Length: 74
Ligand SMILES: [Zn+2]
Picture 1: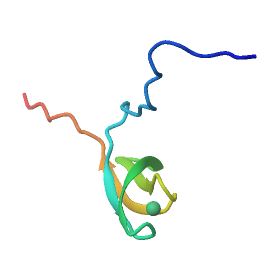
Picture 2: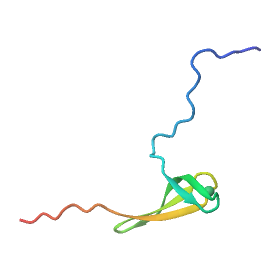
Picture 3: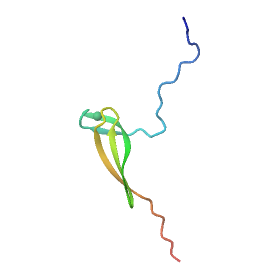
Picture 4: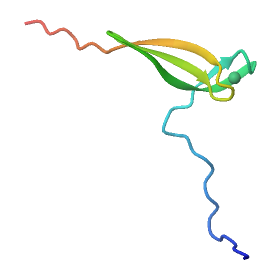
């Protein structure tokens, strides 16, 4: 079998759904793209963990507070 694929080359892997973010990874000793992981759901927000996409090392955590609607005064 000699099957040759013709046509435009397939595009490289694209991960543009999430905004790429880089943080310094202590294990890689360089800035690496990170993956955001939901660590914990709090009553007033979320705790998210940032994991190095290269080695899986945890590079940071971030607490996101839920957006509160502005108080409406009458
Ligand atoms: Zn790393």
